[in-house]
Structure formats: structure tokens, C-alpha cells
Figure 1 (tube, helix red, strand yellow):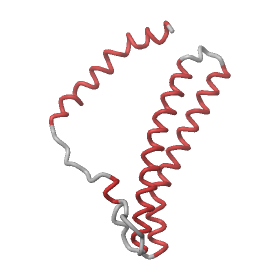
Figure 2 (figure 1 turned 90 degrees about the vertical axis):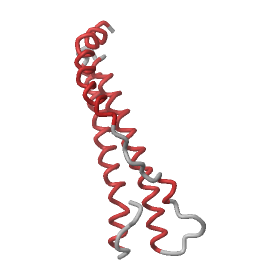
Figure 3 (figure 1 turned 90 degrees about the horizontal axis):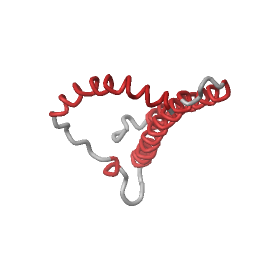
Length: 130
């Protein structure tokens, strides 16, 4: 625990110093983006485009979930590595957790690409909500 506290004392000011310029740029107001829920087809799906839009919404949610899961995996792996204390088994467990994070990123990227691939195979042209 002392190592973690020492690490925070040594690198905490550096992290704050690096974050201050980002806070200074926080004055611009981003343009609002339409929420994902607005793209969900309402009622019965009667066309191919409606099915593709539904795929886009489902896979977009999967993408965001997997990105959040990746961040959690990386934080857990970093904690495991910092608290390993040189124990080879704990370092190996941290490495496997990082591998899980890499797999989650790969699946997230596939989830983003699947609706576009399906749309191109079905000849739907462009998928509007992706």
C-alpha cells in the first residue's frame, strides 16, 4: 500500500499538470448529437432498411458497452500489476487481464463493422444510423 501512496505522491502533480490544459479547452460547447434511441425503428419493421437500422442500434450499444468494459479491464490489470509485488503468478494474472482488454477492443471494432458488412452484402446501400 505504501508503494501506491508513494506513486500517487510522485506522479499525482504531473497528472494534474497534464490535465490543466484540457480543462482550459473545456470552454467550447460541443454540438449535440442525436441519441441512439432516436434511431430505433418504431412499430413493425417492414423493410430491409428497418432491419439494418435495428442492427445498427444493437451493435452500437454493444460497441459502447465493450469500450466501457475495456476501460475497466485495463484499470483492473493496472491495479493487479501494481499490487503484484514481483509475484510471478500475480503478474501473469495482470497480463491475462490485459489480454482480455485487447480481445474486448477487437470485438468492439467488429461490432462497429458488422452492420456495414451486412448492409453491403444485402445491397442496402448506406446504413443511415451507423
